[in-house]
Length: 71
Image (cartoon, one colour):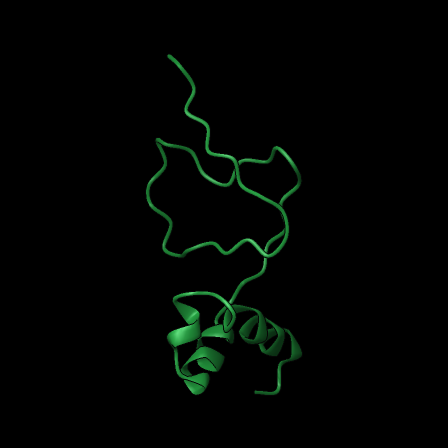
């Protein structure tokens, strides 16, 4: 693995389930497909009406708040 960002991602993920059960080489391959995005506090990741995203999200630092607005 030559990409230092993907190496750092693999190093982070290997500490958390289910990634801690994934073989090292597979985890390295997965981490090469990562797209890193930054969100500011209060920024929406997705809404309830939205179609499912073709990816999953992992929070490195910070927190996510789930809010369902009353109609």
